[in-house]
Image 1 (tube, rainbow, N blue to C red):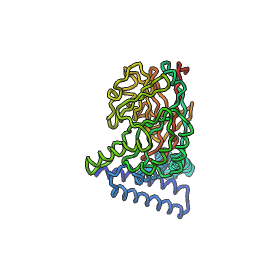
Image 2: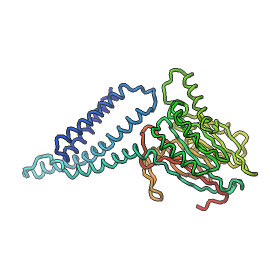
Image 3: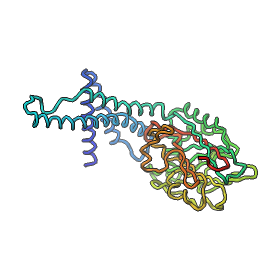
Image 4: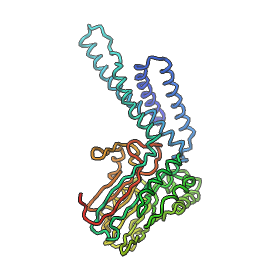
Length: 410
């Protein structure tokens, strides 16, 4: 019962305060009426959605857009509430002074709400509103090519200058614009890398989500060293209430077959030798291994036949795997490629100045390059999106890594 009553009370509290801010600024009854109609209509929709929505359906497109509009409506209102709440605390203190210290002043106990404070509150609330709106309309397809050069003293000579294009977290069930996806595939092909690697989450839940996009993703060029992939946590169908274990297994098998349909070699706790000239590196692919999610990855099995001296690139979807097992492993995995975090699809990144996202409080490695004793992990910010149907500050990423022989000059 409390799970229902408490959220309702919080919603009412936020609605009352945000209405006070609008009422202070807008004197027109039509504006106030329109505000109330929109607010009440969306609140009724939320009630209807959560009462009627089958939670077993997972994060489908309706869920994502509901989440998007929920954030769009209520994050600004929460900011309004916080600002006006602080003002009311100040007004209350001022009222106490007026009543008990200056009792003969003739002023009312509680001073009126100041229009200036409401204007400031609305101005602050406009920032997340416009940011979230941009993220849902433009940001989610604002693909960025991020380039990184890494030096390794033991890199085989024939691999000096080798380039890798790394993508992660496609989440095809969230896509709604074929033209934008084709643009991203064109960006991948423009890099003309020697190796293309994909580190998991090809769908949100169901294999069928990828079917409309197979022909587009098949257009990723076939590089000289091949295209390889691994699974992510969403690829196991763990976030859906299946009618039977058989249906879940069938979906999982279909998801694995999707990789073949887009011409990627799926590595399931295994490794392959990548040869160039007289040189060779080992590409290791583990299934998902995460501290907070499914642990299907088996690094020992995936590394069978590999020696400590071999140059190794590990593909592991969740960067917590690197933090808890890989970075100090005696087998010396030179470079790990991960994704999973999406950079929370929300944050602030100004190169050389600031890099922040709420996800950093859950993952030590959440976006970009990290190093420990000469071993690296690169966390891709994700190709697609899920839950919130947009991106604010943390844009979808196509990573290009160049391997160079030599000591790191940094």
